[in-house]
Length: 386
Image (tube, rainbow, N blue to C red):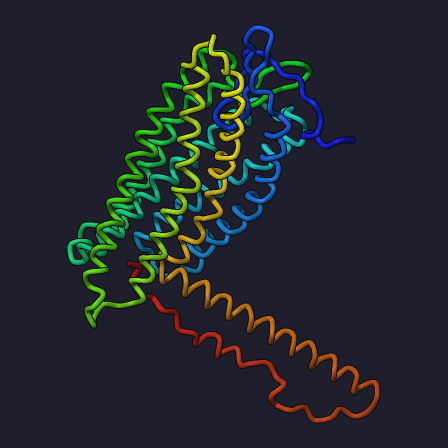
């Protein structure tokens, strides 16, 4: 049996996708946007990679933030909410993956289809705003270190995170209106039902681009331009810590890479695609060719947007000294524990063999596992996060 993306899937008029799915539009005797084979293959490969990587890395990050990090900081609050957003989105990817493996047939309840659509935009724009908040936080810490201690508190950070969740959730509620659709013997998901839905999405798109991408992106550029300028001015100062400078450069690179690779292409491609579908004259001689090309570009850029959850763990590692130290010390303790277990197992096996074959020979004291008290004397570096 051929894979779903290798088989021809019937197209259906008027049922068009949201930003994450391919489109089939009927104009006269020609169907535009019948690129389901390309779409199914691209999404299947992407979600097979993003789901395990994003879920595992962000779940481990949440474990470190909640269970291993000894001190609550403002940086930790924002990073923890970012990881929580990525975990929530990753948990919906298996349903999307099954949908595309089934050739575009939805086997789950209607409310779950709506939730998967909603969770994509919830994750996308909470990630953007949390990254923006982290950039502002770092800007204040570098340029106004004294005022930052009294201005930025854990309580205020928690209130900001709650406001971001509520703002994005309320703004994304229109996507809960689009559920499953019946057509050609299949139950479709992620698809608005009419041109009216397309026009509603077209209007929402520019609000989302302005408030959810353009303003945050300009804010991040302004913050890191000021940060880099300040660090360059002070780089000749003997008191300037090169470690903090390198950390700032790493954090800047991760956040800008996330925006330039994951968010920017998707928002540009989405806006152009919607403009072509809604505003391009129906009598345009190359309308179908343009729409089909833009749909393929949109599929690729959405795959990049969905992969943003794989980049964020790099941000946790580079942005927080406490997080790095916790991960390193946990890894060392795990390695020591594994080595001690191996030595103890080898010792017991040796004793068992000696009982079988003769008197037990003296064992060198170096063969005994390390004193457990040594592991308890590991000192964590609890420096404040920048």
